[in-house]
Image (cartoon, rainbow, N blue to C red; front, side, top):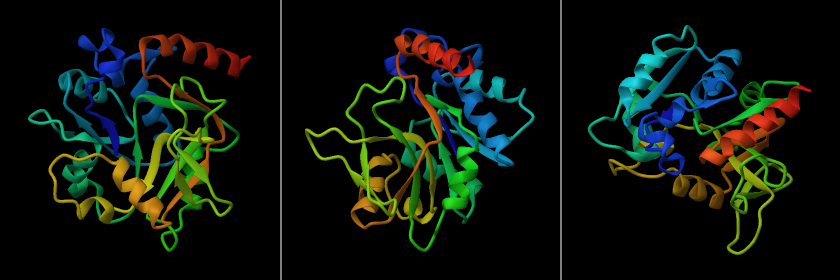
Length: 232
């Protein structure tokens, strides 16, 4: 599941005419970094939800060869990430699936992070597995982190007025039942993650490489400079 339905309010004025997933960084649309990583990891089908400036996103997706894209249309009502997932469940099936934001991406390390996640996934111990990145060294992080991590990989929610060593990268693996049991039409994912963490069922995998969060217009240049440094 690739989230592409948001309004991108923090990216204004760019997103008044261009949907955030199509904002270009180093010559490529943000969502193409995500979709290319999925394709390289062997993912064959991606469900992409659309709402704001949906026609532009659909036109862009038609030019892609891999992965195969199914569109989940939220033009009538924006459902937030949780509600968007619930609407898309018929496409996603009964097995655990990847979720990916489109306002961030990463410079890959020696191995595919998505393949590492698939190898680390343990349904007996986990309801969700999140790819997390170091708060201090990631690009574009303007908040005090999201999680601490136990030695066995379990994630713990950041305490108030504390700095946490890891940020959620926007990429995870979820069991569909986490979403299917929700009754609301529109709902957020964060409370579901925090509930899983409280039950010891939320695990993390540290990202191998450099994570780049592109949340504001100023972050575009910062991300491009980080990409340039990584290839020198």
